[in-house]
Image 1 (tube, one colour):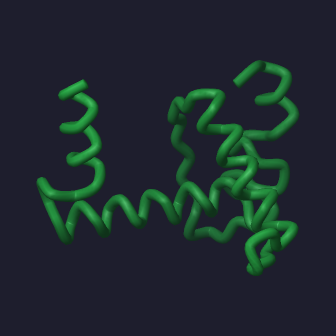
Image 2 (cartoon, rainbow, N blue to C red; image 1 turned 90 degrees about the vertical axis):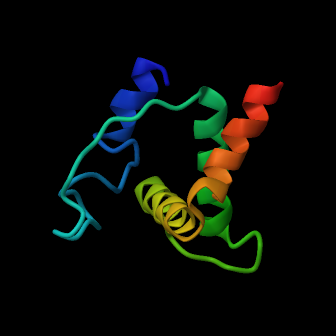
Length: 98
């Protein structure tokens, strides 16, 4: 992400969201830094905007932080349920074969 984009989006990379910012509950008060590709961030923006305009029949104002928390929850649930057969490990195995 370029510096101009990062600076314009705030601490959490979302105009309305951030640790302790508007729309955030006290439950979500931990901040972490992770690195993403430009393509991943663009796709995240698209999903967020499509949800906000109701493109797929479901319309809700949602931020990138909430989307990323949901994705993390899904990863944790999948790993806890399937262990070594979870989606993440299967993807890593497949990638290492190529």
